[in-house]
Amino acid sequence: MPEEWRSVLVPIFKNKGDVQSCSNYSGIKLMSHTMKVWERVVEARLRKVVEICEQQYGFMPRKSTTDAIFALRILMEKYRDGQRELHCVFVDLEKAYDRVPREELWYCMRKSGVAEKYVRVVQDMYERSRTVVRCAVGQTEEFSVEVGLHQGSALSPFLFAIVMDQLPEEVRQESPWTMMFADDIVICSESREQVEENLERWRFALERRGMKVSRTKTEYMCVNEREGSGTVRLQGEEVKKVQEFKYLGSTVQSNGECGKEVKKRVQAGWNGWRKVSGVLCDQKISARIKGKVYRTVVRAAMLYGLETVWFRDSH
Image (cartoon, rainbow, N blue to C red; front, side, top):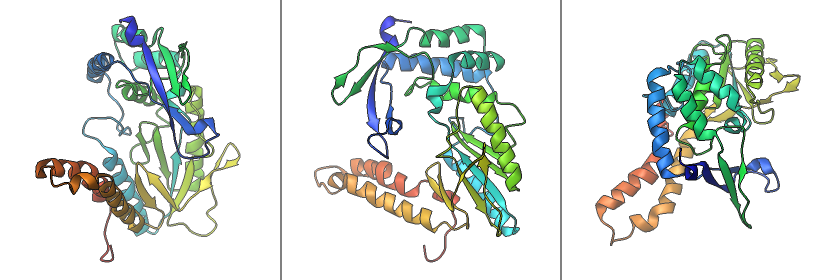
């Protein structure tokens, strides 16, 4: 691989939260466009030989976020109709892509049936890779990164799916009891004790592979809760209990209502309109261009995930 493909620039972006906390900043690697084309070629070859489990919805053919959202909503609705409790834990992984050990990646690729020549191709992509970080005061000197997947890489999502696919079978229950969208994991069970046990199994399996479950961002929700159902613990620490959760961009509520999600979609549509109102109201711009902008920015934000919700007359 050409040496110039090995050097990448990483601009730093501020996420939500405290400006003084390093964990609230993230970077996306700006790679050579030719390198991305090469990654797409390699990805296409890998997809022909690697079969990912049905629980993985992320970056899989004919699957999308709305499929996972719909499956979760239907499961919750069935348990509400039957007046039974459903316990859900939404697992958050700390810096999931950045924590994957490279040796673990090579092992999982070989175990998935990837030919050795393709393993060596991916190894070559990561060998002698150099990074420059750009921040407000300038750029750092080049340095090497020996762990994790490349952020912003076209190949990284599928490589991460390969690693997650190699988790033991006793950890990965059938869908919809376990659903994954890349590093977004939801675990469901009929009892609090069982979901707590499953969460501990996930923690053990993930930490054996160099990843870590976030104690602060992992959350627990109980559908059709009875009094005194308690909460879930992870290694003795109480998991935060919530009445609603934003799952893959769509708000799910423990009481089964969809009113908050409908309001958020309306608000998202108005926010999109405000962003592009200058274009949509400009008489010099053709109706064809305005239509494309409207469908891309306004309508897409307003209708996202609404095929998974049910409506009242008040909505």
